Length: 152
Image 1 (tube, one colour):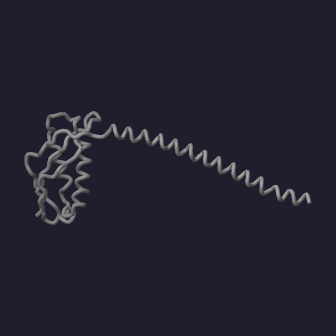
Image 2: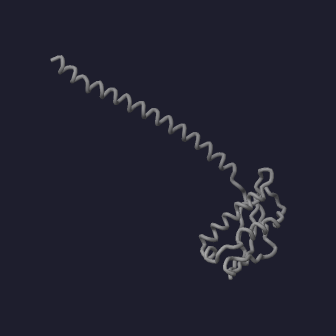
Image 3: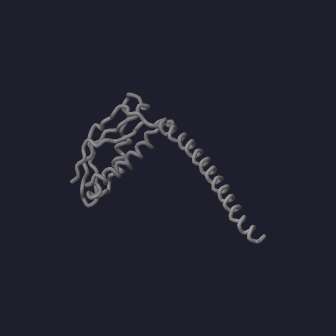
């Protein structure tokens, strides 16, 4: 009879222990979730501070002709979207011309014939221009717009 009492009480103890473990896990997960929420909330606030505001647009004075692969050519015209932090004065586009020539030279017509291909190459060009036109941690350029894009 003593053995029957011990076996009957054992499940009750394990149920209580299970409830305690579940409660602890919920408290830990809730605390971790709240901590992550507040930490991530701080990141989005700093990202919002870094958001660039459009400034003046500086058009390239002339188009450039770039040699593509297999004897083809690209006639490219573009304009540079400056940031508000760059001021009202147009930036010197000499380096932008060089970056565009370097980026497009040797590309295939197939790469440039689709919207996705043009966009991928443009993203690379914009990243290089942002890097080149950043002075004292102030970004002067934020985008590039095509004004002419003809392949032959």
